Image (cartoon, rainbow, N blue to C red; front, side):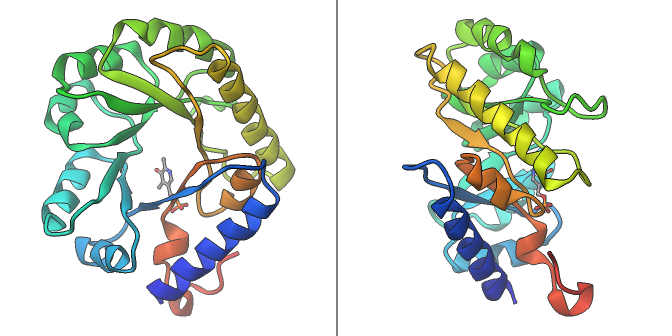
Length: 231
Ligand SMILES: *Cc1c(COP(=O)(O)O)cnc(C)c1O
């Protein structure tokens, strides 16, 4: 089941890449937040090396359980409470949800290495969503210059649930445009070449619009027999 799901997801990514801007490469980040470490390990054994959790303690637990697996890349994709930063920051490779200077300051204080960060952007303007507004991204990133433990590798967003595909596409395109604007500033600490966008419901649209990291959970781990066909 897992192997088949993985194959389907990879094929869809490859097909979407044919319709995407040229020269893009997509990293499949497997979101393991809803499964056990044993399930995550099965996926690793199928060759997936990028794993993500949205909570610090769960990431550390998975990491502990999978410590015999070499060469894994760990992504934290959820907001990080300031007081938890010291417990996790030196154990992750990518942080996808940077949206506050307070967080940046604490990362600077606690990190022993440069952390690859995505600035999270609230493109849709939904009040329930985390992230910097599109208009505020440039200023926020300029303010990050003083933190030499932070490298802004790109921008991240979550599209709202239940919107029609054309609306979701519009949000992804707006994020991609913003990413290009920032990249053109040529800031040494903020190359901003990457786009973390696309989840189970919308990753094909995201890839078509230039995503370089897709974060996928449900489509990999769901059981078709129990839950019915997933669109
Ligand atoms: C849970 C989660 C995902 C994965 O969502 P699926 O719909 O299960 O693929 C991606 N990104 C973030 C930030 C998440 O919290």
